[in-house]
Length: 422
Image (cartoon, rainbow, N blue to C red; front, side, top):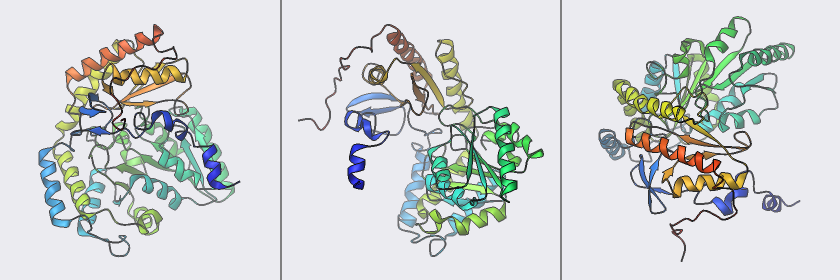
């Protein structure tokens, strides 16, 4: 079969919705300063979708530094991969300060968090090794694991009995094939907000021989007494072997890092193909990441300000009878029951068109069938008024669902014409 004909008949899990959702649910265009108040298709929206946790994308001091860095370095410096011609002192300084912050011996800056995560797994594991991973991991981890023909085992998230059972199987298989075991998990689960039971997983190191890799994109900066992430919150920062984080959330930038022992990081530095065969992170962005890291470390009040929004939001949603699962982080999911996809779509549209709330919606197969997840990302820029309004709006939305408002075939009217319409 012709390969292009094949994709025409099977556009993919998300692609099947492109005709209906392009520009609205997928590839929406938000306008205005990054924050709670933005425009979507000409309408003012209360935005809960951007992971600008500490508001650094809007911080005038940060923006002024960004401009100076851009003037100093431009966007071409350095040119080439770091292995060849792209190494700079600013990259090395950022790595040193990241390692110090997360209490590891060394760190390596990633020009892309996603590519880096895929490449780390590819670099560490061979065909005789076993990868053990949780069911709710990020797509980058899934894709890194899919590259391998090695033995793979899934464990149920936050089910320590299942984790140990699968770990025992993994260790037995690894021993038979003279391989090792890598347990991979998100620290702060991005889809649900729960923390992985890293303390209980780390305790299993006393019984089993394995290495622990924790990806903590949402926890880096926001979770833990000092913002190191879920492992610090659970008292086992020194027990995780590798920590992977992104600059795209708490720091409001692009890129990421992996931190661990000096020997392992140096191995990754020389062998991660996604980094050794691609351009280095531009010096202007690297300098900005370093400045933002220093800013977050010197302003611990940012975490308090963030949690001053998170706590009343989550408390208020629970008190209103809404299901937010067992989140333990700023990530705030609201689970709404729907009868079918039609009702799910109408629910999502009404939240934007009637209540003027813009947020991420997650549906099956990414969560269980019969549910829509409305994921809220609170930031220091949100207000208590935003919180109160959103709780009231989501309460009204669930009442509308119960009343059957979204079950008919008639689409909910969108008063805003598409910007491309004649």
